[in-house]
Amino acid sequence: MDIEHITDDLDLEKTLFSEDEIRNRLGELAKRIESDYDGEDLLLVGVLKGAVMVMADLARTLDRHVEMDWMAISSYGSGTTSSGVVRILKDLDADITGRHVLVVEDIIDTGLTLSWLISNLRSRGPASVEICTLLRKPDAQKMSVDVRYVGFDIANEFVVGYGLDYAEKYRNLRSIGTLAPHVYS
Ligand code: XMP
Ligand code: MG
Image (cartoon, rainbow, N blue to C red; front, top):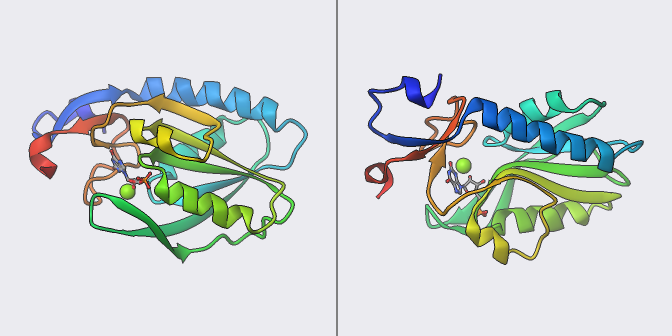
């Protein structure tokens, strides 16, 4: 299902990244990841639910063995803004002590949720923790945590598709697009 094909959905405004563009960019990131972790064990940690598509496609693009694990976290906040106060809904199955961990994210906005997650993971004694995100919004530049792999930097607008939702909808779009402002304003 592609945004262009949902011509009757007035909630969607424009396509930002097509399926092909996403695939090509993930291919570039995968090459860097393969070379950076050459000879090392690698655990990909996906953050549910948004990162499901990125995780599935990135993991299959990587020409190497990886393990995959998942966390679900919820950020206490006033609806649209995250507070950085986080609760773990589902923890990792794996013990990450001494392991190389790559957190796979769909989007970083303020980075508050991710900052909390990274310090939580670092406290468990991994060999390393790095971040790979498909999308990054401008506010994320204020974040104290380095993001090693970024797919695309985007403007400060609400996007959906490819795992990203608005009220749990649009996650199954193959491309990424903007939501018409009338939907959320
Ligand atoms: P922070 O601000 O902590 O929050 O980096 C990141 C989380 O906020 C959600 N988010 C979005 N979700 N379209 C979405 O579907 C967007 O444009 C968007 N911006 C932020 C998302 O859950 C992300 O994990
Ligand atoms: Mg979300």
